[in-house]
Amino acid sequence: MIQKEKSRLREKLLSELKSFTGEKRIRQNQEIQKKFLTLSEFATARTIGFFASEEFEISTDELIVKSLAIEKRVFLPRIKKHSNRQQTALEFHEIKNLTELEIGKFGIRAPREDSPKIEIEELDLLVVPGLAFTKNGKRLGRGGGFFDCVLKKFLGVSVGLVFDFQVLEKVPMEKWDERVTKILVGD
Image (cartoon, rainbow, N blue to C red; front, top):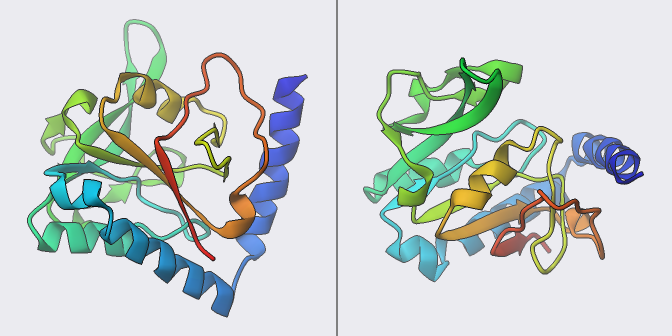
């Protein structure tokens, strides 16, 4: 029952995200980036985990570039298959600039496999993707559970970046679904 509700909500939000264009989108994207760069947790973070945003998501590219410019260490996820259990997981690899990204699984940009790795517990700040969030940090991802596994281990502050229509009163949650610490919303 919850799976069907999640699937319907994912379809609806993906459609809304892909059709959200124009001035309002640009303005909200800029507002969210400004809010992120003024977070006290950003100021004190030495190591930051980002995701490589897709065209329809809040852009993380500028945040990555600005973080690197002030000598923050930046890490992005790469999907790694565990050969012994046929499970997949995310590993975070360091990048020095966006040109180091390649097209990985599911067509998502990812760091090269040979770039330095960091354990999730060593990140100070983590930017987490999501299709929807509640004000208290409940999150609806894309359905793979990758970031839920990461958030289970993560010790620092996790942040969701969202357009205003992605903030919902409630999000269907299951026992393995994890919350983020904060959300930053465009107005």
